Amino acid sequence: MIHYDLRCTAGHEFDGWFKDSAGFEAQAKAGFVECPVCGGTEVTKRLMAPAIPRKGRARAKEVEAPPPAPTLAAPPPLPPPGSSQAAAGPVPAQVVALLQRMRAEIEKHCDYVGPGFAEEARKMHRGESDRRGIYGEASEADTEALQEEGIEIARLPWVPRADG
Image 1: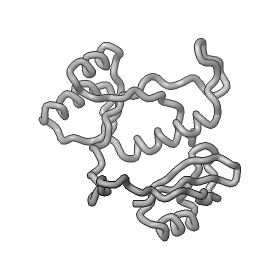
Image 2 (image 1 turned 135 degrees about the vertical axis):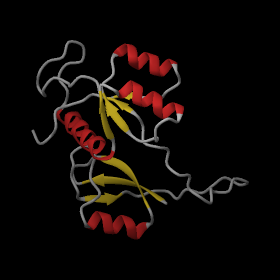
Image 3 (image 1 turned 90 degrees about the vertical axis):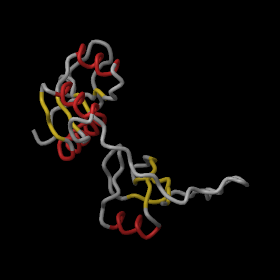
Image 4 (image 1 turned 45 degrees about the horizontal axis):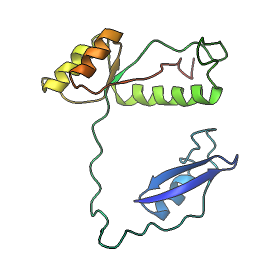
């Protein structure tokens, strides 16, 4: 794997991991490398220093398998963009766009379990159900109980879909 510092034509800087240099070039040419801030696909590599391990520390031979998909509890939807929020003010449009893309990925790759989220998370934790990415609704009390039981969950802002 190779790590690149990247920049889009709008000047936003971010990073990405690729199998090799040819992998980056192919993905960038196909428009698959996207700026997380503005969504631009005209991306270039920035000048980087090579990563050289310290003496006595060899690089890892194998990359560990990625952890299983997280279990997610979807909180109530955010107010529409541009509406005021009591503590934080309006949500910037770029943040809403990122949250909408995140929602689309969650809906694409995880199972919706609805209000049965807490019980399904417990079943998975106890080995009674296959481990997989799930999302659904959970009350504040259920969320606290799951965390006290050592079940890792994440609460995410649930914005309206980008397509309507």
